Length: 168
Image (tube, rainbow, N blue to C red):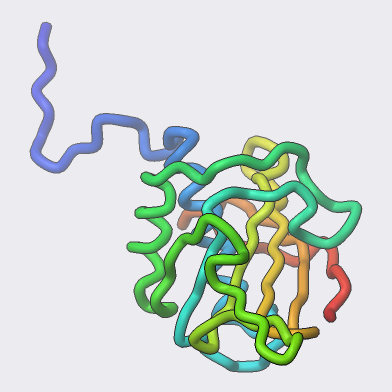
């Protein structure tokens, strides 16, 4: 028998999203926490521009606490993250640090008073994962940390910081 779908009924099981959807949900939770909580170590500051590298880097978080691998963040994941974080600020993905870093007088800084965020690969599987995050603003204004991210009944959420990297 053919089963008719009700309008707006999802085709897939929402409890078991595709790998890309899972990645988008996890990175959205990580970026939201990092950019709105003060974890980036710049106080209550909201950045007028948020740049995120379009690929993950092993070792982005606190040293010694990183998932192996790294690679491109799929465009669909980038779009989902950008759409989900419109309330946080204008977020765009960039191909390299050089695309947004300026160096007048030898002090490297992110253009437009922004922040450049580098994400680590999602480490682990199941309902508890770790994600490294590095944020760079200017000269010695940078920090890195590793988040513990857990799936709850309401979705993915950061449950804590498992490691702090050096704050430069």
